[in-house]
Image 1: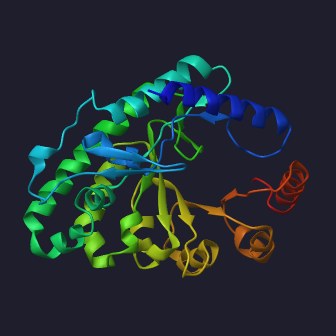
Image 2: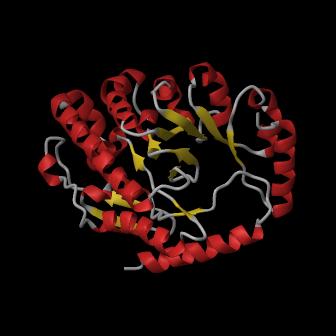
Length: 304
């Protein structure tokens, strides 16, 4: 019941932020859309949601991968209505100020992992046929769910503003996540996840993929999927920073990388950044720092 007032508050905060940063020479698109936490990527299929201060969790009683009868692609699902209805609300009420932003979606493996919990990893060995049927269903569900998001957002300048705020031409999907690849082998990803992600990407004009540095063994397979336009690589504890992992995996990267960099990483990797297009995310502590970093990037990495 608080979804619309929450979006109003988000819009007020965003408006103040964009007024403060007016004139900043970066490439950000002023955009607005719903963001209620991780649960919305899977809870549109049913179950219950637990909300915390800065995220949410999806709880679902699925005691076997064969229980497809428990899943529903239901436009009356409350989380579906919060997400898709929230996109519609943002576009209708704030479209003059902000581009409407899609929310994005998890990949089939990630949703299956959420629905089955850690038992999902046993399912890959113990219930292969039922697991494949579940993943087939989730592929259809993702295309349906994200298609509803696109319809709600409408086209912006001939393209789509993804859940992370990047603009892509046409009916693009983003972000599309492969977080579960941090916990499986490349062979398992190629057998169970890759065909579905390829099929999902093929039904769109482009894609923004989200993956983690911890998924390094699977990155060549993910980065080689046709139709992936941008690929964001997040840093993780207990492994090298994303930019270091990207440097090692660079030869297998077909998409344009999206990297969150510190100032030290920006300076230390300038040789790498000068060789290719890269989307850089940078969190500045002040407007003065943001202006300084923008000037530095414009000078050292001119758009060609």
